[in-house]
Image (cartoon, rainbow, N blue to C red; front, side, top):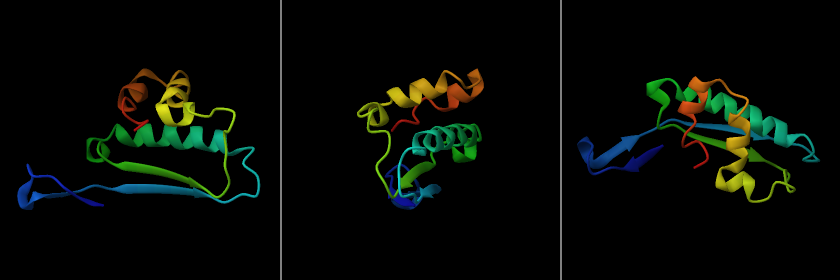
Amino acid sequence: MERANPERFGSRETTDVFVEVKSYEYGKDLLSFYADFLRRAAVLSLDERYRDTVFIFLASVPFGTSKGAELCDGRFVAQCEQEWPERIRAAASDLHT
């Protein structure tokens, strides 16, 4: 992905984008897949090359409706982080955005 950055040569910068797509009829198990996706994104973020990478999780059905806003405001990520080693938690500090 390319985006504007006036501090970079040519006023542009590029970043990697990783997308995971799940296609199911029911969203019952998607929350666990999303938690796995978040962990993989955090692990990849340990590598400086991927520090500014954009991670996108797409699903064909709604999921986690009982979690509501927690999926969007960072609370779900914080819950997942509690199971991760400290080094991975540090890399995930801005993962919810």
